Image (cartoon, rainbow, N blue to C red; front, side, top):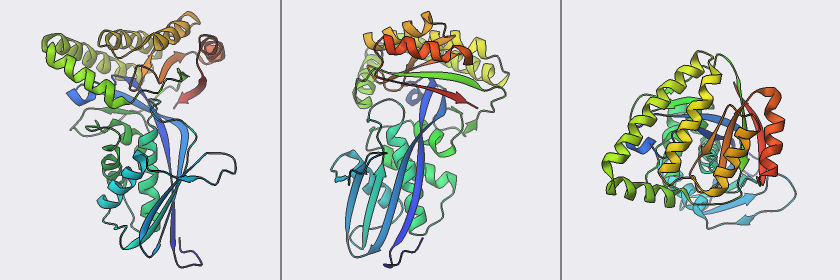
Length: 314
């Protein structure tokens, strides 16, 4: 969009995601399932004559004027600009991001930012980008937040649909025949995903046979889970989530706070519950009958969740 001052403006919006099955295992070629979560990240990009880069992070609500940031998002902007062939030395570029969800929550905040950023820059240049291009460029931005990202986060956010994801293979979008309800509980503990990923890698190197067993078990879980979703056997999805959580616990990816929320959700009637995301903090998810979701949410709050949310995957 051309502005009166001669600059061009574009807007983008990304969502979040939840890993339904098999976080941490995607980088080893194990299939995973992820679903979009409607928590928006909004980005506005302005490109004009001049030179320089300014990145402002603003809360989603309120009148805070924002502040310059030298965080990972600043570096991600530079990676995305480079991928799009846009030079900050030849263009004055201002990026404004509205986002009030803390980072490292396990819900794909960084992916939401990178996808929204790519959309916004595409509109400001103007340089129309296909979904495939947005996904590829956003993946480059994701490399700032994780040295070796699997690509699942930016993929599910770009397409805003549930995905069955195997790294390096063609994308499979999952058709949802029957919607299902998730209750999300946040421990309030922020743990960088890269830290946990590194520990899993070292454990895998130390005990390759054991971890190969974990990988094969979780591969079977993912294949059964996608069939459960496609054929509306939602009740059978819950035990698979439970089994997946137990493997992740054995891999050292969970923590007492996550386990407490998972147990609280199950005791309150959840069909299944597990950690979701980087682990050792962040979020967990529970599969719920719609009429039990509020009761499960209350149980999570009583068990120490600092933030909860009920969402429907449809």
